[in-house]
Length: 69
Length: 69
DNA sequence: ACATAATGTCAAGCTTGCTTTACATAATAA
DNA sequence: TTATTATGTAAAGCAAGCTTGACATTATGT
Image (cartoon, rainbow over all chains, first blue to last red; front, top):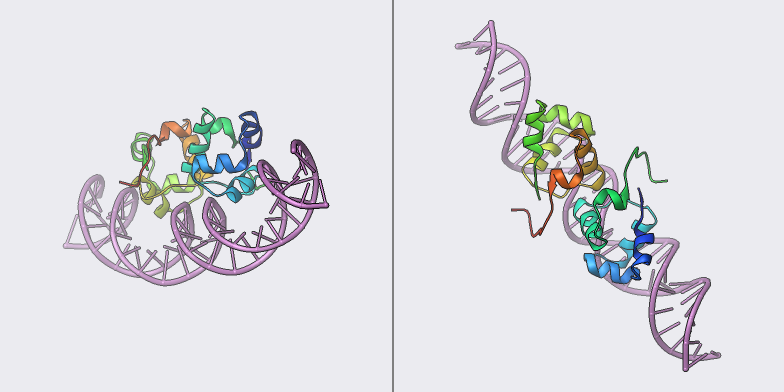
């Protein structure tokens, strides 16, 4: 699952801990997400997208998924 | 988690089983989703949105989430 | 009446998202 | 050096997404 989280977070000068707090998850969850380790819940994806003022599909690159690469 | 799955599925004359097969989940999962029972994974939400040619946010109504009501 | 298709419920269990704790590494700064 | 901040890793465990199977209900059709 590729995504633009790291890029967007750095662009907004947020730490992983800041972002985690904003969306109500642990820092570990943000780390794993940035590294493409898993498929988040829809609600979490939505909360993250809202932090950056984007649509979910603009944050998470979802076309032709196979595995996590 | 409210959504328009039932409406969209019926509009497309698909059975729950058809839809389940299209997105690779069990029929039970579609039933539970239509009844707003849970928060699907992002990939599943995306596959469902694509079946209907819509954006995720057009299928799942995500603003001001509290609990499943 | 009988059959079949579509939807729904319940329950047990597997899988994985997410948490928590603890520790490691690198960067910046006094 | 010492301290602090930000990031990363690993492992154990909890919680929830999703599966499977069995059975009930309603509708449609012959």
